[in-house]
Length: 568
Image 1 (cartoon, helix red, strand yellow):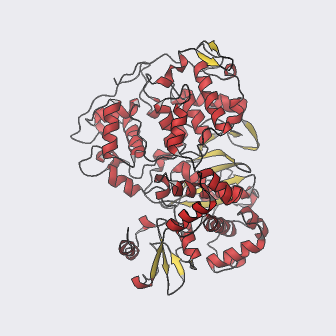
Image 2 (image 1 turned 30 degrees about the vertical axis):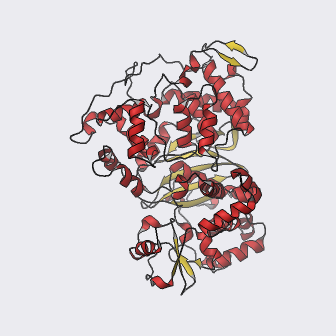
């Protein structure tokens, strides 16, 4: 976009561009989101910035009316895999606050000087300024939604001193912290945001509890999103509750529990966080946003997938705002992808629940069915294959993935190089294209992954009259649906569970064949059993000492009869 196009978006008050860019008004010295309801400034008095930090660095303060710092994140950082995109995801996750600029530069493989030059050139602000803007936003949330002392808020938001906290809040918001609390929007009512205990007040819920809104770009299909997560909820770590979803979070300085529920309007969801330490608030919020895919632009996705004449147009129109759920814990997602090979969603939940029960760390304060954190990769890497409730080959693959993650040989964090991570995953025995691509789509949050070998995807393609073989499907997706192929995959998964009569009129249909057990197709776990990684349950695998180990059954494992690939 050029400045003329940006100004047209400002004149039209288009909410789709909130968080994509910011507009500074030179006559007032404030910066706003494009949809600010205030009188539109003259074009000659406007400057445009790709980040709030860039506007702040240029001397503009945040508008008190539209609150631009509370805009949804830019969808650009989900798509971009270059050093700037990787850096932005790491900064959002709190990497600068934890490791400094030197740690950030080391994670992306650049010198501090070069990284600063790249960020300033593209965003108008360096890593310190970007981290400062995020700390200011975290501080505002704590000031306006809790009764915590200002000194506690300062350190919880990541500031190194109270003076730095006071100066930053005054610079960014043109008010003192106490003034923001007096004139703030008021406390959120936990009764309206999924208070699992029904306490009715944030204070009685504990000192580490914060309730806040997570802004998003509507529309959003929350029924499908919560259903997708609830169907795969691991006992002890996740559960559906009170019409929403809650789970345990493993965070840099402790653990926490998040309860996510519907918002009062379609432009946000409620998020209630109970944290061991409030300094993890910013990181917890960003991980929840990635889990729910809240920074995406659903209009851009729909325009690409649902264009007139595209075979997906009908199923995209039936599910406006469908999200591609990410991950709150990439290492956990990788483990669950390996566990889920060759078995149904329900069986994978059972097996993973047993792993959590045996290897997970108990919570100090269990909440409902949430009792443990998911075991870290260093714990599973030290396990014996005989202790894992799965075939020996798959257990060896799980241990190999965990060991690579624990040693840092594979990075699945928000700043990871997606191509390098996928290549290294495929280099491990028992990890083939489907598993590595699934991990790339969910753990790495890549919006452009197509699982062409997945049986549910191929079945939906055949219903739409498209070739169902993996090679043809992948070629068609590459030509039609980039850079949103992950969303195409999710739409096809969702369509595979519809009856053939739900396919748009005029589309050739075939009846979805059940598997050998007579069970209907179940999203991504109905994948092609002929993939190399699925040989893990049938081929002897060398473990540790080089001795071949048979693929016998393990005590406590969930066994299912073998299924034929009915889509071939």
